[in-house]
Amino acid sequence: MTRTVYTTATTLDGFIATDDHDLGWLLSRRLDDDSPWSHDRFMAGVGAIVMGRSTFDWVERHRAASGDAWFYTQPSWVMTSRDLPVPEGADVRAAAGDVGDVHPALVEAAGGKDVWVVGGGGLAAAFAEAGLLDEVVVSIAPVAIGSGMPLLPGTVELELLDSGVNGEFLCARYGVVRSPA
Ligand SMILES: NC(=O)c1ccc[n+]([C@@H]2O[C@H](COP(=O)([O-])OP(=O)(O)OC[C@H]3O[C@@H](n4cnc5c(N)ncnc54)[C@H](OP(=O)(O)O)[C@@H]3O)[C@@H](O)[C@H]2O)c1
Image (tube, rainbow, N blue to C red; front, side, top):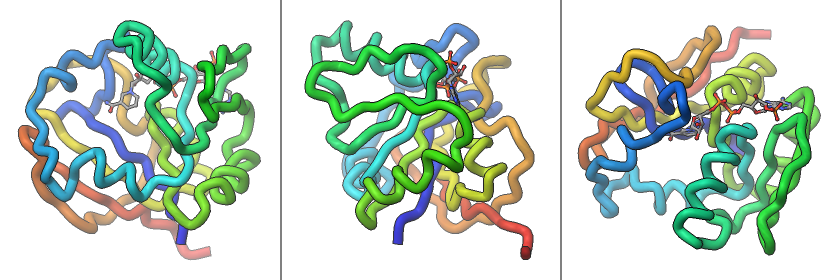
């Protein structure tokens, strides 16, 4: 069954990027490709992707600098209120407004695999607030940066489902606890 999962790396003090959208604190760190928490293993279970505009812009800046093709083969949605320059050959589309209106298309595109909410934190919080987020998976880098873009700016009750290590990162998988209807 398709789960909607917010999976991200975070600093120990709960930021997913610096104030100016830098990820140096993350990209400089050691990962273990053989870890059960590896990105490749996670991506194998992902059928559709949704991200906010700042995250898309970061991916595009990174991609342009490296000369790579669009990173993802899964159908991807970018939440934005502005025109979206879709990378050539990429299965990417823009959406805006209520995440509840976009979610059915994400689930359908996922074809039984998971929907990955890439970030940012506000977008993940919107899915949680709409009762559409099933899990939060964090890889915690051994660093605090004092300020930045928040991990999950909302009130979300979680239960720990699993934990482990990937290189320098402490990893945890949480289920979103929903109030009984
Ligand atoms: N550590 C990690 O693993 C990780 C993971 C993901 C992201 N990141 C980084 O974290 C930062 C996140 O930036 P952010 O907090 O600004 O979040 P974001 O979700 O990437 O971008 C926020 C923007 O997305 C658009 N948006 C979001 N929801 C929308 C909606 N429902 N309807 C229409 N537009 C919507 C709005 O932009 P417009 O209205 O201007 O279009 C909004 O200002 C980025 O630097 C990203 O690279 C890090």
